[in-house]
Length: 319
Ligand code: HEM
Image 1: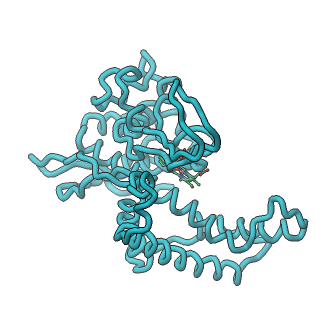
Image 2 (image 1 turned 60 degrees about the vertical axis):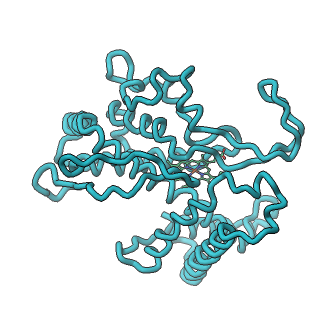
Image 3 (image 1 turned 90 degrees about the horizontal axis):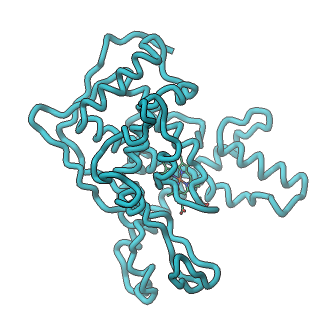
């Protein structure tokens, strides 16, 4: 979407970025001691070096792509998000509306934000989903039954199917809630002295939301530690209970909540339904999945060595 390009699975440049994304995740996690004791920023830090090195290499990867886009840019053929940003930048220049103009040098940073915020998050959501599916095979079967009955096997799932698969939707909500794989929001700062629920928070204080706590609060959820998609279904089991769904906190809150939320929900839905229509996921007999989360900017799970996949029915070309 960002670059209008599909990378080969063995593209070395992309692979090295994907692999180092995990490192970035570790060092960028909220909880860097220097966020709380500013003096620590002056001490040498291995974390900070990894953080800076990763950003440098990622920015140079993006700069190269943005440069290529500028060279081949055609006003009447907008190929992707990068072209669209270039268009904004050039168009606004013509209108000389400097208030909303995107400066040319900011394009790389904007692509960086979209790629950085939208890549690791969606892949982590999908990978937790697969882990829950192999841990709860009956839930996997129930989603596949819903897919078979509603979509069938003759065509692939589409975005327009989303409202017609309540159990699948409830499963995704329960993955978001139970894993809470983004346990905290991005750190923000108070712009003035504030009182919240009787607590005084001075101006310029680092604040962020503990989403994990909200998603596991016993006052909000019945048996919060139990993985149970049905908690999001109406009494008859035929609809998603909207009010319950809205209680799940994974995209942040307020003005700076995730701007990519709708696209993220669509992506998770489309990838999961496409995979589950065709494939069955499991772990080798007698093996158990370790669901202990590894702490980082996103909570990851340990690599699962016993994961296996098989086709549900003979391959047919679908569209
Ligand atoms: C399941 C996937 C995703 C989750 C759980 C998620 C979650 C979040 C969270 C918690 C924040 C911080 C909100 C805050 O600090 O209050 C955020 C910010 C952001 N997200 Fe997402 N996100 C996801 C996918 C995406 C995608 C696909 C995109 C872009 C295509 C995206 C773009 C952004 C951007 C640009 C911000 C910064 C917004 C700002 O600072 O104003 N996210 N996201």
